[in-house]
Image (cartoon, rainbow, N blue to C red):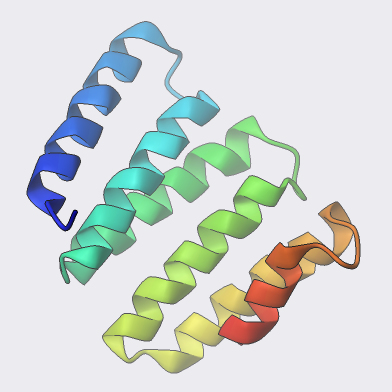
Length: 120
């Protein structure tokens, strides 16, 4: 509906609840940071988006196996932010890292691979 500030407020409230209820490196916290990052990206607040996506990636690196698809999703989201900022070499690096993980974690005809190739 385009009501990003309302969505952001809800995602931030969800994060606060999860911080109380879950351990500090629980994957659900990473999902909240990811959602917040997506909202900031949609709002054009790229530095805040990048910070949120990087926090999600940090948690996922601790909580998940090294080739988990959620890590690839974090790298793709970071790449999207860099792309929007016009920092194309950083975007490309993030997209390529996502693709590396997806090639290991997903079947060869998975649609996420197609998305990563399209991003690249």
